[in-house]
Image (cartoon, rainbow, N blue to C red):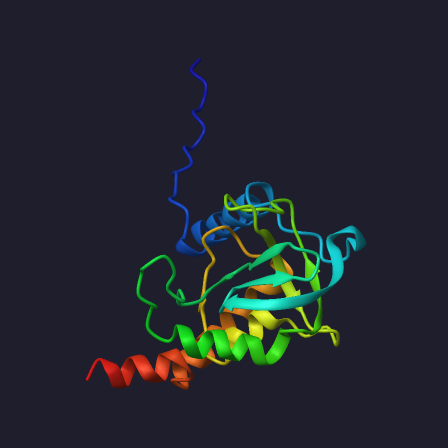
Amino acid sequence: MARPSKPRRSQRSPTPATLAVIAFLVLAMLRVLVFKPEAASDPLTWQTVTVRYVIDGDTFDLTDGRRVRMLGIDAPEAGFNGKPAEFYSAESTAWLRDRIEERRVKLRTGDEKKDRYGRTLAWVFDTDGILINQQMLAAGQVKLLPDFGLPLDLESSLRDAESKARLLKTGLWKTRQQKSR
């Protein structure tokens, strides 16, 4: 006698919601494994230093001789070696000078502590713990630079700060609108 055959289960394609969940999990794993976010609570990544001179809107010198490049932001270049200054560079540089020049700040450094120019790469906080990088975004003095990954604990607030500045047409976002007319 022939055995009764089992009913075949039809193969259904995954729903869009299932695909979205899978994509989210894959991206989250990549974010943690590939970009290796910094540990915010690691006391070894924090240093209190004194700023000697602000060079431009994202770079400054310390009294100990080091040069610092702020992470996660991109300020208009001030113009060196015969190159003209970029649009809004003077305003961005002046904003940063008013906040940190000749003052103490806290640096939070990650795994990549120096860039190809030998500058210390850091997130910069004032002595009250306020993130200067984020304040610059919120004031429209710089653009977000997420190209090298952003720490998980800072990413949403940095993105929000730039979005609000763009929506409110603050700083360089306001001036860009007027200039393009």
